[in-house]
Image 1 (spheres, one colour):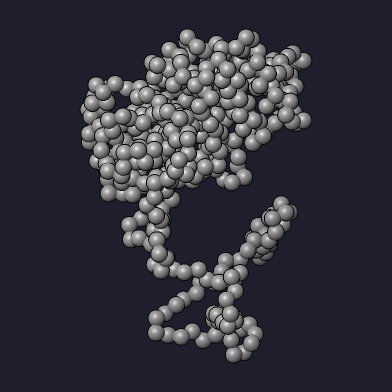
Image 2 (cartoon, helix red, strand yellow):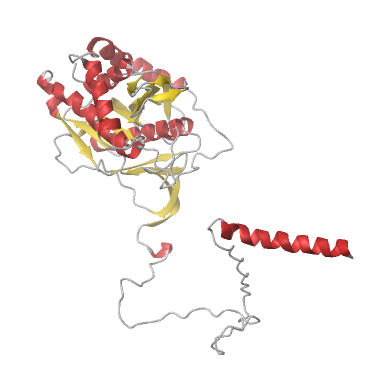
Length: 412
């Protein structure tokens, strides 16, 4: 008898403890599960609407729609999808600023029908070697830019990336723009921010779009010359695109049935700087919106938006017809998380993207290039010994030379 009472007491204490733990943690009591509502066709449920009070045995009445007799814009039901003017039966898969594709670079290469080449093109490597040093005391000035963005622009001992990452990128671009007096062709460029891109293409019976805000775009009055020769473009026909079956290529893309098939570069007709040169992206590792990009996701985003800018520009110049371009469109991209830089050069060779056969586009990628190792407000100590000094530590000058070569490409 005593053993039975002890077991009963322990069971009740365990149940009470489950209820008490969330209260102690400050989360409140657990919410009881909702009762399942059954909707049987042809039968009307008996509710307690006539009784005017809650009765457990009867069903909950459905609220009546109140017709005010006049149009209230703050309390109105939107139209159904089928009744919207832009509704279509075929879905469209959209890649936007917060899209994080599961397969990363592989998925981006398949969506854009592209061949990947590791490293930067030879022309840009040559610029980096020959024109990589353009300033007196260049390394000291770049380290001052890093210190200003990471240490001097805030009073916190551990600055957040949301604060110093955009400042670092803008200061590096401004530092490169000071070469306008030396290379007059650099004055034929303009930076554009908060522009909206939209372009549409078909890929194996599916419809895709790249649209929305994406970054800072450097435009020029003249396009970049193709980096791959005609022989290299023809050789891309032998390349076989890598698949990731059984994962569908549309995974993590926004599916919608209400859309418009548009092609918009984000700039009005007659804009003097009509050709995209370099797209600059920043990833601030912001966890408040639930989107945390890894390097492979950021690289896929660079490929997709470089491709989107190139495709929108190509359709504007050569029409909507899918074909192999006589003059390929080249768009560069640079992305950073505040410490590491990624470089992508995209060459659009064809707008015929439906089939996986034929000529492919080309992507050059040089990723995971560290600009510096640490930027500490206070020195890092271990057993009273300075392990990492304060300030900028582990600066890599070759990374900035590549950044400068991307900027000077098309001028020198």
